[in-house]
Image (cartoon, rainbow over the protein chains, first blue to last red):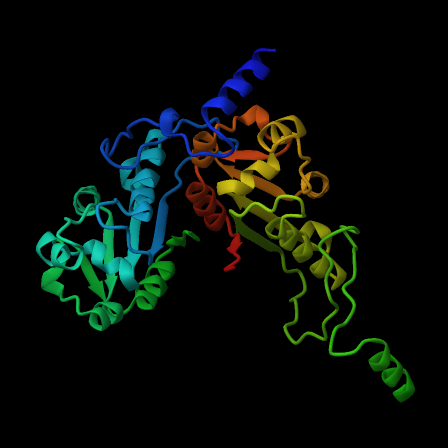
Length: 179
Length: 173
């Protein structure tokens, strides 16, 4: 009965499968980026697990919008620390190639190419780097798009290619996030 | 022998060998016999994980079915069923296809979940379905809304990291 009432309420509030972020709150590492939802998880994290996760980012965010995948990296850090994993045991590398390279550049480089808007992912990138997350831009896609090292936000690194970065980080024991 | 080949060619134009059901799942996950060159080393244990986001209203979810095909095809080629461990990490709209009939119907104008029977059969055979807790929360799906046996993880990223660290290989498509 209660369940039915809750369900119908929920359905009225959120038609079909709409995204509802009301159950999400700030995470412990980066409270301003990557809000998290508590989960009754069935997949225990074995004690002593060291997460080393590589994200692959290719899609550029719309001007004025935080990159969804960069936010996912922040959420990943927040939610594992919230689940009791020590912060130093959640190591994340974000490997960027293609148009998403523009989400890693300074405002003065970003704005003229994006209708005068500032880079809405810049603050998140800076905070993630401050929290120990690594960002690598594919040197090949940077060259093909005319992105120079000096254009990059402080702390963003460049690799020979995205493929190189993925290969090296997987050899170091990083698992690849598939989306 | 030759005549047989000609007869076979006449019967089946183009290349198509007939997909076969079974041996683990008869009604779905059909596979085609292959004269394969990649031998499965004796004693090998496969642990393989799929990533599924897309829903498939009204039909069998092809992402789920691919996992069933993986099992059928390897067991058909001589592997023991217990040596083929498969997990399906689900985030996005496909989560709906792992919910109970009541929840699914309420969210889909009374429609039935065409993948439900397949999912139940796969769960019974030890396939793990692991739902992203972050996406479930955003969709308003609770643990009690999931079919019995479906697991909930902190997130899909978390599940993939844990499974890969435990030796599961990630299917790249």
